[in-house]
Length: 263
Image (cartoon, rainbow, N blue to C red):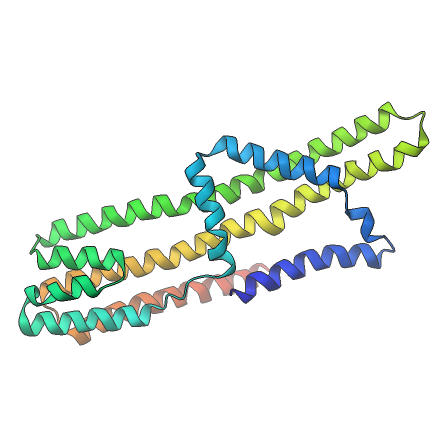
């Protein structure tokens, strides 16, 4: 389970609820079913119109990746590629044929199969890069769904607020209905902003980060396969692939320094 996601959700919603209570407000004031129906229904409706059903279903499935990301360390992958390189260097590329069936990673399995078939190095790279680009385009669809929903939610919240004010204006003569209408008006705006900025947009950003990690590992696989086909020394291959990990760590540190500088 991704602890950062859970902590972020609890902290975000907790801060809003806690702020409401500290100001002397009641929790019941934030619970408005009408506002929830307007914001959630309108946001989901707009999102459904914007994307094909296959993309929407995939986005729902990928919520699991945000909460419980798959364990995918690049170090075991580097170790496997080194083993393939050592075996191919000793017994030839054809000796990797049994490894194709044993490999669980679909991308690596396809690449190994092409290496065993003796495909031209340039064609190998082109084929694997096309496969990578296709995977990336498909995978980023879920992030786009959540980001689009994050864009719709605040606007739908404003629509809810306007509807609440219309209800208030139509019932100026009945003071008993004024409070409910005003509550729906303001709470709908809060629901829209919370849905966008605490759920949808962060989920889309998290999915993009997960995709970045997967793409990096697939790029490592391509470089490893090219090195195997060239007959490079396994230790040289290890150093070359480790540079991908160092580059990712360097980008993360650079991003952290940039955030601190902006602060």
